[in-house]
Length: 389
Image 1 (cartoon, rainbow, N blue to C red):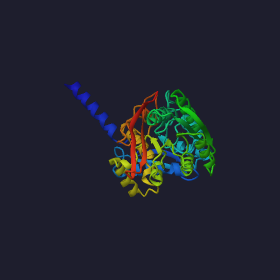
Image 2 (image 1 turned 90 degrees about the vertical axis):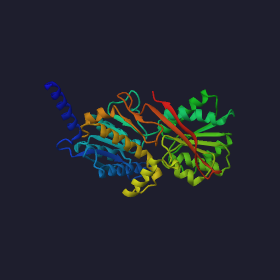
Image 3 (image 1 turned 45 degrees about the horizontal axis):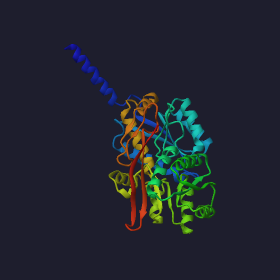
Image 4 (image 1 turned 60 degrees about the vertical axis):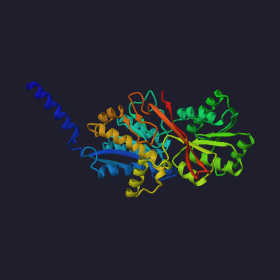
């Protein structure tokens, strides 16, 4: 009987220690380096705002087991030197986690300094570097929806399905940067294996002001489908130029954060966007939550831009709830390696991480377009799963 009491008391004390904030750790400290200003701010500021709003709500509700989440937000402007200075500041401030929501120019500094300090690094909102993919680097994680190889593994079969037996004369549009060119090269290989005719492939300079010459080449080549995996300005710039030229084909591109806004603006029937986040046109309960929270915290960007950052914040929230002491990087890292975060219908399935995979077990895609007959955005294809290997 005495032994049973001792076992019970030990278990009870363990539970109390788990639920009670540790002495001296009244706040959970997280560092975020983001392109809040600068040329890329339209892409990354909404992610910063999503984290800020989400955790303001969590803190207002009492935090994580009584501990408030303290974010140290720093503006790196998408610049490498500023990112290096910022991450050193984070290390001095003893953050438990570093979040990057910025351009790839900042990645090397964040990765090298964070890993040397043995602090986990989460990429949220930008392109995932190679480190989170299997076999994963122990300290590097990514919640961003898009991933070059897996996106193409969905996109090419989708085009084939939509062509309904008609011969596909395909054009590819990339931005002239390494990650975009890689995405198109992967898609080109898959398209050839699927028996499609590759009629045009182009990598367009970042500073392009007039996309008409590129659109003219696509039209003259006789493309009836175009696939673009590029920055949004390239994707939408080429599409609008094709539309002005009277092109009658179909255009498929990645649903970057402005996609829903642009579908509503353009109201054209041959622009398809695919991605890993549910658009607000579906009016899910989670969308209404984002609208309410964003309004309360004074977000400056349209709420339709916030889902990428919001889903990353959900993942972090789940990690912090599961960790006995979130201020201890080794304990936080252990929790991150066992993550399974419910995305509340904002994505097609959970984000699941393991020791060997810090991207996700499966990635999910949905396709949308404008329907002129219905006068609204419609779902073209429901959630489809691609396994991450």
